Image 1 (cartoon, rainbow, N blue to C red):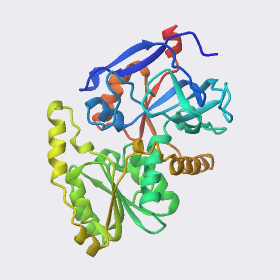
Image 2: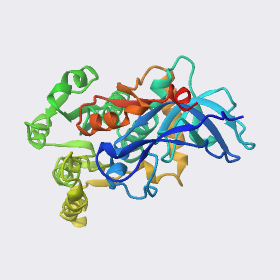
Image 3: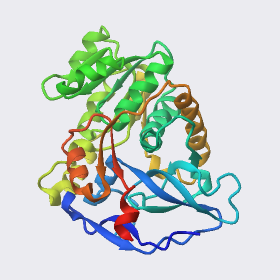
Image 4: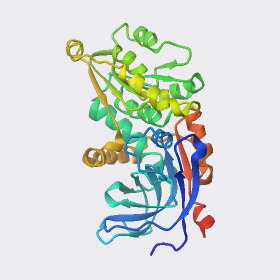
Length: 353
């Protein structure tokens, strides 16, 4: 049976800066037959949560809403159709919003048992960032040994995941990041680190490749970057666009949607030019794959294998208490994190009782 205590949530009360996040005490969620009820230990924070808070995330639920795409925790209860997960098991998985909550109902197909010897923090940091990196690099980019990948924002959650995955397959890794993150990225296997604030990444990459360019580019910065990325692709090279982080600042919140729309409308990729250059462009959005979970589940199972083997190790920068969500969002939006940031909900049950 589910606990009688109230559930603590972090909600987006209105669109705006980090201070629009608020704590709320609600009733436990109703459980469907194919779902498990998870008492949350840790919830991952992703840039998609920042976008939803700012009102820039297409398809986000109406306000007030609870952000969060991934959790780890203990199963409290299982629906009547659940066959592979039992109460008392430690699990982790994907949520479709709603993760910033002390209790979450999740379909059984979207959760996995925590492997023996792996921490609850590590598995909470795995699903969104590693699935995003994996599907972009291998399902779309077909990255292989000896090929070269340029990873923008390499010090973030997706970036550090992509660096580890590229290392597994033996790719050459170029990265852009603030200079304070370069030593740690080099220790992870990055061959060329570029300070995006001070250096021209196009020039540096062309110099490093003798003008050839790279086989794959992963970019969440936005339209201005995408135009420059395209000309860095080698023949048969691929650009994967998966965000607009460059447009997300701490000021002029009301003007953000208009600035973003204006920049998007300036991006032009001519089909004939692309055919002549043998270059490809993809867009990627993990949150739009809920109706196509086959490749997602296959990727998650492969990631679990690598996690058990010690070939990947989620990089966790900081863990904030669930009631410090405002500070956690500010920390990420200011680009201070190296790797993943989590919310700790373990004390929430005592707070709500």
